[in-house]
Each structure stands twice: as C-alpha cells, then as structure tokens.
Image (cartoon, rainbow, N blue to C red; front, side):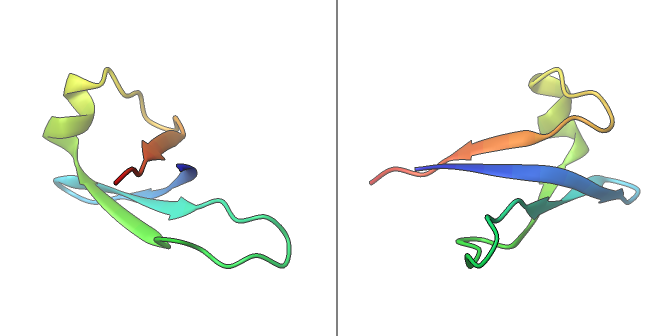
Length: 56
C-alpha cells in the first residue's frame, strides 16, 4: 500500500506531513512527523511530497 503525504509545516527538527485522502475516504495514518536528518538522507527538499509504502 502506498500513501501520499504533503508537507504541512516544519518544526526545528521535524517536518509534519498530512496524508492525502481521496474525497469521502478516511486516512490510514493521518499526520506523520519525520526527522529532518532522515529526510536529508532521502534528498528531500522543502515543500516536496512524501510517499510511504506499507507492507506486511
């Protein structure tokens, strides 16, 4: 399952993302906080969207 997140706001050490949900749908995760140090490893640039893959 792939989930799309959009940048909502930045704090000192993290970036807060909000899950993009289709109209009428419900979020699987909702809000996601990611450490800026982790995003640097992903070559994240401010304002980029994030894709999270869930698997079992």
